[in-house]
Length: 108
Length: 119
Image (cartoon, rainbow over all chains, first blue to last red; front, side, top):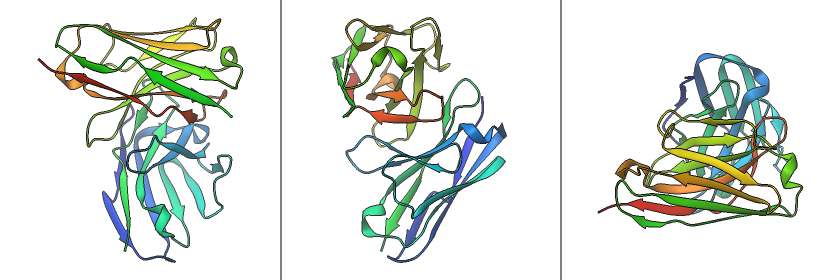
């Protein structure tokens, strides 16, 4: 199975700063099949990015994705308090589908 | 507006069975693959299973293979998860989610139903 390792585990930044979240795969993942989700406490996850870099419907352009092969990145620019959440990457390239363990983003 | 509502969760003893349902509305249910994803208390997301739009293909996480069965009734716009031989480690919130039709992401999620396996 493809193991996704996210780093850092926790990120603490101030409003207006830029957040860079990493997702490293144990095997190559096709760029079409890497997605990112945001989950706030008590809520279901929400799709942010699919196909490595395409924003889902209604997602702010402050969110952007990049990467290829085994290294993928989610960047959140101009942080806002509402961005406080846990972020997960997911690969849908190979069965079983897998998620990373998540990065918790705290806004100071 | 796409709507997914899970039901069927509750407290169940180890070794027993439970069936979850996910009622879908406001989209053409029989055109989309559907997934179950779970989240143990205080933990991350774990993908459980997926079923194709027409129900002909199913895939499972190793942790549930042979114990859980995903199915769907397209005439009722409903997704199911039959869970047998439940274990304490199956305790989690179970979400149903819609595949985006191109297997690129899960674009709509229900609010989840809690399953607690405890004696």
